[in-house]
Image: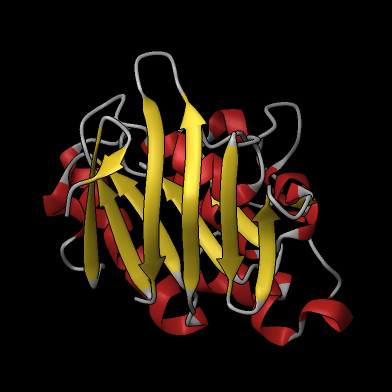
Length: 214
């Protein structure tokens, strides 16, 4: 995977997000304090926010080119996104949450089939339960599975362990490693705690006040 971000500029409340970087690692951590612009950067890549200026390219596909008038809709970018709040639908069962946006196996292939994804994340037995009756770790795995079932080319994870205690974090990390190894998916992993991602990531980018400093 090659993700290219050039001339990315997005004014925020207290500063301007300005990024120029090329990412080729399979799993890259984006670290920094709260309010550094980490989530805004993921939103730009996912197509959920419009930049003042940007050129964003994933492999050979241009996703955003403000100068050229290109802005691929979020639903067409083939990017899986797990936000901080997980964004699960509380009125739907686990199964219906998982099938939201799921591509048929004929289109996605067996790698991203419902059966394979739920087996990898060990959530088959949760299918008929309400998401309101899941533990924090179970909700996290359901959110990860839902993102995978969209057959993404890139997975964006926005502080996926932030709401879990230390014991639950230790249980979820192996599932993230399993996703990396089983699906071969490139990932951008936003965190403010570098220690939690050391077993997972190959590269670390530090973001402070909207700028990459390392």
